[in-house]
Length: 127
Picture 1 (cartoon, rainbow, N blue to C red):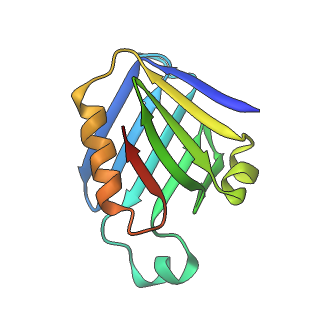
Picture 2: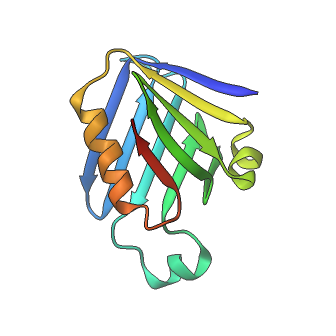
């Protein structure tokens, strides 16, 4: 099963040691969403437990995990996210496609920031 999201709501923020990049399908009462979160200063315990790096969540915390993203690709005006086996299992989907409506500069900013933070954990392709 693929997860396809026409994102009308897009947010990107960096504060209090976290980067949060989120997409929702409704501007006011978000029904479906995809969130990418990256700790900018993980605690030692989080690192030991594998709770550092990129966290991905689809619609609910029960569909979220760390080490779930293999690659993030910008292809024209959409974003495709390839998941690891762990990501497929935890998110309950094989692939994610996000179509922002419309594409905004904040998306390029968020993708570039994720690329800078990846440290080999996942690939980011900005085509």
